[in-house]
Structure formats: C-alpha cells, structure tokens
Length: 470
Ligand code: FAD
Image 1 (spheres, rainbow, N blue to C red):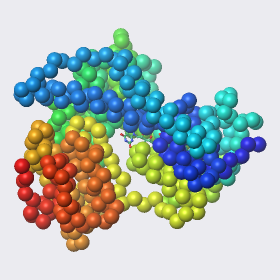
Image 2: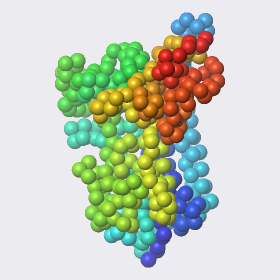
Image 3: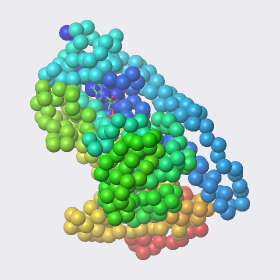
Image 4: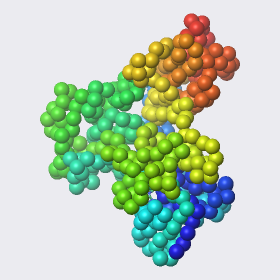
C-alpha cells in the first residue's frame, strides 16, 4: 500500500501552507484536495474573488463621490458582467496555477480526490482520478486535517430554487438582480451586499440581533452602518427573523418576523450568509481518536494536536476565528510541532478585517470584551476628522481606537474603521505581539500625511498630547 510521511487533507490556506513548510523541512508530503484546483475556500470562493469584486465596487463608489461636488464629473459606469467575471476568474487562475507550481517545485505529491479516514493511520479515496494511489488507500505517519468549512444552510432555507444562493453562488455573479435580500448582517453578507448594491441591485439586509456585525466594536460599526444605510437606502432590518423561504413565480417569497419588517415580501434573489459549518462530516473522523464538539469543530491543543496522536487539525475545522491567516499560521505551527520543534500557537492577536467601505479592522482585546471580563482598561480614540490625509480624501468618517492597560500602559487591543483599515491594522498587531507600550507608538515617527498617523495620534490621546496636524 502507498505510504507517506505526512498526509495533509485539504488544499486551502491552512493545508497548502502546512504542506509547503513540511516539504521545505525535508518531509515527504502528500497533499489531498477534492477539487480540481488548489487554493481552498479562500482562493476559489472566498477572500480573493470577493476582494476582486469589492475593488470594482469601491471604484464605482469613489466615482459617485467625485460626481457629487469635487468638480470632476464622470459618466455612469457601464457594467459588462462577462468581463467582470473573467477578470475575477483570471486572478483565481493565476494564483491557483502558482500554487500547483509551488507544490511541484517542492515535490509535494498532490492527490485530487475526496479523502476519509479508515483508521488512525490510513486514508481512502473516492473517485477515479489518476493521482489516486493504486488500491485507493494511503497510509501515513502523520496527518493534518485542513478540510475547512462550508456556508451554513439551515433546513428552513434549503429550498429548491436557483434564486437562493450562498456566498459561493453570489460570487458567481450570474446576473445583477433588481432586488436581493441578504440574510445575515455578518461580514460576508455585508461585503457581498456592497458589491451587488454598487452594481445596481436594490439590496436589503435582515439581521436577527439588534445591529450589524454582531460582536464587533460598536464605535467601529457605527460609521459603516451609516454608510450602508445610505447604500441600501434604509433597507436594513435588525431584530428581525426570516421564518421561511419559498420560490414562487420567478421570485423568492420571504416571511419576515420582526418589529422592523413583518409579513411576506418578494425578492429576485436571496443570499443566505448566516455563518459557516466545519467540514468534518463524512471524513471518517469516527474511525480515529479525534474528538469533535457539538458544532463539529475538532478539538486541538496549542500544538494543533487532536486527541489522536497521529493526527493534527488546523484552520476553519478548529473553530473561530475562521480566517485564512489563522489557518496558515496554525498550519505552520502544526508542522513545527510534528517535527518536534518547540512551538505553541498562542498569538497575542489574530487580526480581523471586514473589507466593506469603510473597512473595519481590529486585533487583540476589544472594549466590550474587556468590560465583560471586568478588566480595567483605558480607551484612547482619535477621530479621523482631525487627520489632514482623511480630510484630503474626503473620508473623515474614520476612527482609530486603542485599548490600553492604564497601569502598565501596555496596548491590549486596537480597532480601526476607515478606508485602508485592513492595511493599517498590521502595525497594531506587531505592537501587540511585541507587548508595546503607548510610548512606543507615540515615539515612532509616522509619515505625514498618512492615515497611519492616526495609530500614533490615538496613542497621544492617551497622554492628552494629541495634535491636529494639517
Ligand atoms: P479551506 O480554505 O476551506 O480549504 C479546505 C479545503 O479542503 C477545500 O479546498 C476543500 O475542497 C478541501 N476538502 C474538504 N474536505 C475534503 C476531503 N474530505 N478530501 C479532500 N479535500 C477536502 N478569510 C480571511 O482571512 N479574509 C477574508 O477576506 C475572507 N473572506 C471570505 C469571503 C468569503 C465569501 C468566504 C466564504 C470566506 C472568507 N474568508 C476570509 C474565510 C477563509 O476563506 C477561510 O477562513 C479559509 O479559507 C480557511 O482555510 P482552511 O485551509 O481552513 O480551509
């Protein structure tokens, strides 16, 4: 029977990062992916295609803004869906092909088939792809489960309708519907809603809790909620539940139950984005010693080891936050642990970014979280209205916020809302990893005029020395 030192199941950002590092470290590696291309959710139907489309949405928005009163007028954009889709596909293809080449260069064996565990040291494969080893089985010394997640679709929403989509369907951009309802006010729904709204769809959002982006810092959410209220023309229904969906006469009938929207309404399309489920069913985990919790996430320790001594798990299957960079870092840590290197996956902060406009980014401890823990913190906020660069860009709706330990003056968390927040948060993550004090921020010279200055300025607010530099 074919044998490998390390079998990695899943070719997403967790799986390929683990496979490539293990090969670089001299291991003999087999990477197994059930889809024809490497890249996983992130590359094929997540981070990358959504950002390619969001870029277009942003440019359209900027043109609208300029048209208002900047003294430059552009005509309305003409949208060619075929070209838009082709560009997005081109980006995916180029990156996925690159991953294939990187695997080849490292002599990583790639099997294109669905794998499942027969026992704690054997995998079997479905299908008849020529890459499947003879006998359809593979034994291993170590395995890493990196099978990712899928969009949650509760039974009430599982209707037979081409008009009800998950994020994968929405990214296919089959058409620009006249109306679309986004069920779920989380980041995926808001990102996709932003794309469709800028392409011309009348987007509505329904959210079960009392605000968009449940769990995110309210100071950060406020400017985004205001902008989205405008973009979606007030059609954001919070505290509202969708009871059922039905496909009738070429429309989706949606039953709302809530104080802000009640009754049945029709939409051309519905996007269900209410979270993600780990891909841990049907992969034979019951034939191993791996322990899975009620929601299907695999339990791991700080070395990403499961309860089965031969099997590690990384990425979305290990639980929140379900983010590509978390998967990648866990993948690398899992390999280091397998190699016996001293390693522990205990990051000071895992940044989260919502690529809407404005963007929201945060890392480390947030204000609400600190309050819930009963931890005494000081909050220093710098509104972008005081930033010369933000004024020049016409984007004074931003805010930079530090959460600080008042006794040690160490920074504990950072949140940013505004264009480019996702790029700016890395400075905060470095500060958190290096256990920086506020003085480290304020004494670091930031280039002027940049939005990144606000990271320093918010630190100055803590000392009461912030200046407004125009
Ligand atoms: P995945 O990327 O899901 O990869 C798992 C792979 O395993 C898949 O390719 C799957 O086909 C394969 N697989 C599953 N079962 C088997 C099996 N039995 N045998 C063989 N192969 C199998 N994250 C960010 O950090 N930033 C973003 O901007 C962002 N945007 C997103 C936008 C959308 C619309 C979505 C849906 C997600 C987004 N995410 C984003 C989340 C991100 O995509 C995931 O956190 C990340 O892909 C998880 O990586 P992973 O390696 O754990 O799993």
